[in-house]
Image (cartoon, rainbow, N blue to C red; front, side, top):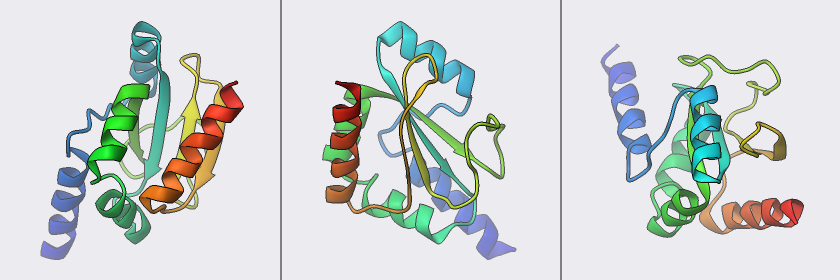
Length: 130
């Protein structure tokens, strides 16, 4: 039980590293419209080694953080804690969705990525928006 609580604390602290995560889908769309941004939706699980690795390796990098904050409203939904709209897959996490401010899916991806691999995903998203 102590290990589970420690994992939850570490996961929560990793998600708060200079990132302003929202945890409500509708609120994220509302903010995105207001700020004229797209939405980056990261779906994870409370106990997920691949999610934890993605957070600690990729989401801990200042360059990644700066890029995400500049271009996206950030939405994290845990399949164990949050209400996730039915049109998003919740099996096989981590999942990455890039959405318009209207909720239209621009790009979908799955898995833990190193920073360079995550930048490749961001490039794909940019190409799809053009």
